[in-house]
Image 1 (cartoon, rainbow, N blue to C red):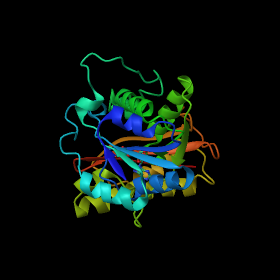
Image 2 (image 1 turned 135 degrees about the horizontal axis):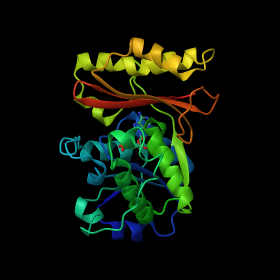
Image 3 (image 1 turned 90 degrees about the horizontal axis):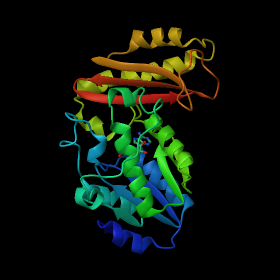
Length: 271
Ligand code: AMP
């Protein structure tokens, strides 16, 4: 396995290779690993990027304290059979203070995460497009844990005619149900227990939705068991991120964003 920091050097290395690519911000956990394993089984060459992208963090968010563990991450990647880690620094990726920018779609980019984190998805699409242009993957792997991000990336690939297959990975959870996230390290033991109410409420809604299709009613049931400090949203959308009032079988996602203590958590369930 090689660790490369320079985009041009990586490009040279990857020339003419068929690549499966997993973009990450590092602090790798079993969620990332499931994407890496999937890529390993489907591609000749596997590339993982590790880059905490500043343009997708808002002022006052956790950019400075975001966990950084390149050494441990490298070991995980090596054991998983990754061929290349791309770990650029900020100067490698942003070499001009006046850059060409990509904007998210006006409607789907500014609801939910885009509403509570304005500008976040502009930064996500900007870095993902840069990474795609450097790595030139055949397939790129993204987790359903970040459902809106996944939908926007799929839309960008389609709108910009990128010749890349986007592969979706299921959300990996702790045995308790808590969705794995690099940000879970911020949670105290008590907060972690309270955070379980998020996945529990999603599971409950999924179970009830077999009979109850009305989203408002499902939301009421979820609110009864949620134990969080600040709920930002419970939302019901179809897979293209249009809001829905009634559950549509195999085409609905329930999403939650909430703070437990100072930690902002997101989770969702595909129905
Ligand atoms: P991040 O490092 O948080 O930017 O995530 C990198 C990729 O891993 C994204 O495609 C995420 O959706 C995915 N990911 C994060 N957490 C999980 C999880 N618990 N299960 C599956 N995929 C995940």
